[in-house]
Length: 318
Image (cartoon, rainbow, N blue to C red):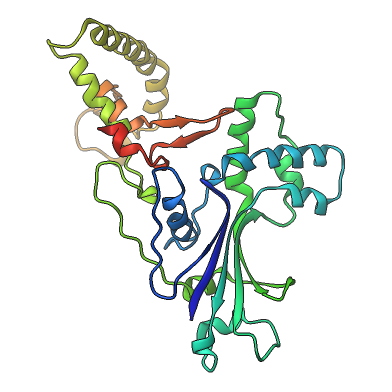
């Protein structure tokens, strides 16, 4: 059994791309940001050990307009079928040749739905799509007027109402398809990826936010005696903002945090007095930059991408 060809739709840099795979080895070569990693990552995303891991940022940016078209169709009370046809999906379509296993299908048996004794191919479609019966839930409160709010809400709605599903399709009759349990796909395809060992790599499922962590080092440099006046000024501005936040934390936030702490008296503390617990939250600017700051690449129309989604990340870090 071999994967004869693969088609990727609406995943990151790959809008709609088909590749024919060699029986033994297929080598993909190209410049940075041409979709090489995207092709490998769609297999990892659908075959992730804890379940399919696709998210809003994985959609090809050019397909997002489809959500607005579907929203307009929903507002016009179009049929559910016509609305669903406009909603973008992330797809991985595989054509599998099982000529060498025609007498022993194994786990592939569930994916063979044709009755042609002379056909030894089957098609598998993995799709990240809107769940059945969720069109109203998805669109009823969406509003494109405020673009930033719209994309923020769209991101949450995709995470909430989309799911990964799998279909077995008859190659000679694409209309004939059967939905299968996703676990069958994970048994059918075995994948393994070797990640580049570098500061900023393509390991997007355990992101390291290296550029964000580098901001802490930059801040330390800006506070050093040899730093330029411009850097020192920016550093002082950051310190000023954090001090203002600390004042807020020391009042309203601490009052709420204090209420979460138990009184030791209810545990029968043996001392003469109940040494009341208190909570103190201190903001450390270096820690904020290193642990709570992420760098995003700004796209068009409020669409942003995590730092690990850019093939030039290593160059940027250097």
